[in-house]
Length: 289
Image (cartoon, rainbow, N blue to C red; front, top):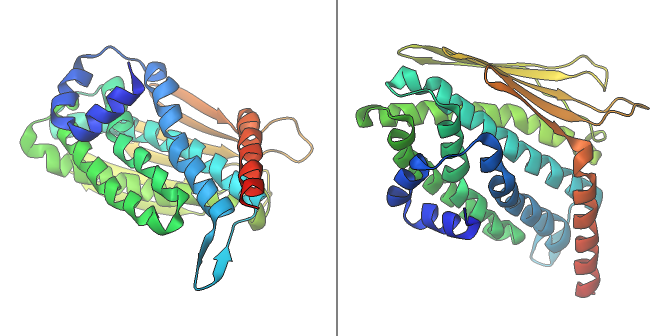
């Protein structure tokens, strides 16, 4: 699969591209590596450059997020983008029977990975913070792309696509708000690179059952894990964030458990990536001087 050609096709001609994607043989790994891992890096890296190198300003003032905080935000944004994409794919599969479709995790992941392509590509505008609003507008287009792909991939009746899509959007928004707490907690200026979630609960009613989002914060200890559970008629997905223990060897991690399996994201493995980005940012800073 040519990454550039696929990104171009699903963005410019989604209606014709979804049947092609539906027929392709994939597994979770082939969808995430390298396609998603490369595209998810675009908004994360560009946001880092925009906030910590270019800065936000106007009328003679300019504000930049410190490098350490910017790097922490970049890494967290990158990891959470992958986490949210997996969660969206699983939820799409879990809810398919509710709307007359066929539950299929790989097809659900296809929808989340390829449907989110326009939004991830638009992350390039984050290099200039003033243009980041364009990314939000493109995000709406990504929802339209996913809307076109739902009946093709999940085999649901077309007349149920709008309701299906609305439920997915609401569930994703709730999850994003809850997981946003993780991103803020990762920023050094907010108490060190730890992880946590504030308590949050919500319920979405559907004709075949309820989707419940329950967030359970850890104890007051900094190394206490926090947990969020998404309950659907087809089963539960649990997202657990575990901070790095003081003096320990284990790195901070995010773990997603679903009936189909478990995925773990280890923050320590991102260290080399972060160092490369830091060196690149320093070189850009020196070039500006």
